[in-house]
Image (tube, rainbow, N blue to C red; front, side):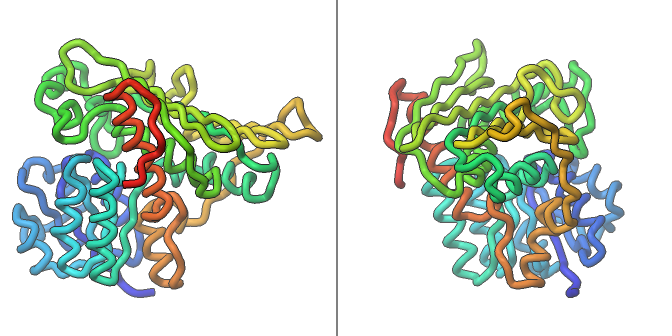
Length: 359
């Protein structure tokens, strides 16, 4: 296996720490550079991964010219994914961009085109795509255990994006309150809000479970919290030729799902023509009903191969074996998820049901 050089660029999103940890733990990866315009945001990663001073940058062009990475991991604010993808794609690198795909379908298409021009690969990292319960559910769907999937019910979120930093480290309430007025997560211009933060998870993995099928139209309603520019709660209904699916996002769950599942539970419930599957985030089993066993039963989560546990390992496996990266993380599946998100955003703004946007 080849040795891969990786640089982490733009630390707007705290998931950069999770991605760099995956890189540091891969036996064939070397972290060759870190870059952010605000040096203080890199301090935790510098300490955690032993990055030397000469590999730390505030200028992205200099970083990439000096370090010559094979792969760049990007974690900018949601509204700036297109800008940063185009900046790094010129250096002929594979690009892993943290979720969501983009702030708009047009931006997503521009990102895909920019990376394609360099002959490299674009990966959109949806962390829920690596959760064993959801991967087990997809295996059961592919095996025909519940017939054709005709409905996806998704509910997900957390206490709020400022309650935790890199590696899910919990922050005290006073720090959350102090950061909220200036955080990009709460600014409309930077792509803030629970809808843009979490809806793409549901619509992209939902499209994966539905075999790439698209809805006909979309209806979305968001809350309007006093004093905030963005939503903290959204509900989206997608109408398909075969039925309805629901996607709900929430900042403000009672607990974070990776510590204690809130109620409602975060995750997916899949309706099939011959059964159902409940796949909750981080659960050790999935619950299945079939016509033969309508009372339901637990299926232990699969032991997931290393290449299906994080975006770094998945991309390297794809490069080494000349195969596609995992389904939800491809531009093709993520683009359909983005179509639904774009339509939901406009639906909420206009207060009406809209036909799925094509561009």
